[in-house]
Image 1 (cartoon, rainbow, N blue to C red):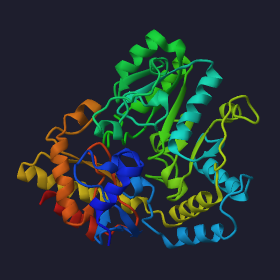
Image 2 (cartoon, rainbow, N blue to C red):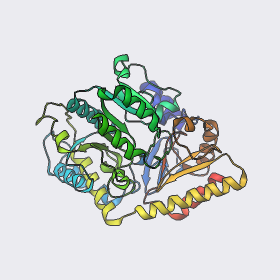
Image 3 (cartoon, helix red, strand yellow):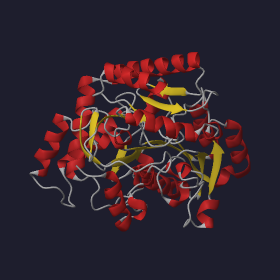
Length: 421
């Protein structure tokens, strides 16, 4: 077994901050970051020998659970034939066909390697086809770490106590307007003043990077109308949401059709893969057909495509969505009922199999300002309390937890009881 403190100390000598993604550093909860040795189903095994029930699930990518037998077999079979070619493969076509068939409005799709890259490409398309440069995003929504969307972002930046990042040009930042999530009046004001300059409105349809925050009724539909009014493209960032709540997009559930949509996490089956897609009239402006350039040596790599195809196949066949929704509801009801009866400052926000434990008595959470009023120190204490009992949560008040198809009802209810003591 490996001591986590020793491993982290070694990491800090060779990796900035000791981690390759900031939230892993436990800055939001304190203590030494964990190191994982393996995972199977709903469980992960840490390098120091502990077995934990995982409610982080690789930040949502592992909707089927860890090391799903069919997904692993698909990766192994593909790996034996070669891991990367930088040349087209049939699997890319099959995955693109599957996505276009299931996601309304996705007439073309370009496979990339990360959500950041997908969003960066979507914004470049929007600017290219409109001839405009400015965008509107929402305070607390996280769209990856490219410059123009790392302005008033959520998740790791909030955990680190920062509202933006050094290294971003003032000119780039000035092209991004930021509005509170769920605030239509703010959007209306921006469009009234600067509408002719706006290339895109980009939004997480369900916000997942200030904790779980749901769109208020009519919010997304109104964004569609505002985008049409000023001639901007509407972009849904569904890197978390895509194939999370149904075998399609959240846009389909909401009945709103974005011009462009980004997806990631689930569609890669746990390997690095994301996508940007939308109407052919916009997507066909990408090179080599159009003049908007995007490229990537490992884009649509065979291993990630194989994992993604198999994951989507299992999701379509097994349809875990109703069960995930039921488990999520039971978890939230158990926690919220007990918290109310005990007078705890705790509220479990939940939608289907996704949840956030907000340490607050003021619910629901509607925007970043609400989320920031929650007690992050109390969340840190809760995190370590349930960790000591064998449950792993996202190490930040501003992230979402996930229930996977591998979680049992007994595990979910035991976790809920552990939360409320």
